[in-house]
Length: 177
Image (cartoon, helix red, strand yellow):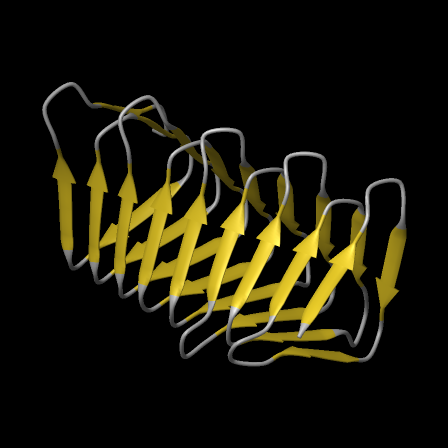
């Protein structure tokens, strides 16, 4: 099955959207996953370069064979929960913001801009690639592996019981006292 939310359209969800294995969901417009809304992604969910996805007081679960590919703006707002047990790719043109709770138990690759002002729990594998930007002003709890290849600025709290790796050419600045 193929589902396209076209450019210049708005989709407001307060129910449940299941993107089942073998399906494709492409958001090129505005998708508002609102209070009580649930997105279960078990396949390919693409947020295109023109797209805005807001997850506010709602749940986005990326599970099984799920692949969340963000080329636009994906915001996990306050009260929102983003669960990843599969693969998230924030591409070079993408901005992924977390103001709620983000749980990464699998693979998250950031090649664009990633900002955390909420709670980020990483028990999986996170990589911030060369030329990417990661900014933490919230709580970052790392029990997995976080690899910084680009620029990372910490103005919040980092609790590390896993592996925090700063590669060649990377920059990690701690501005929190």
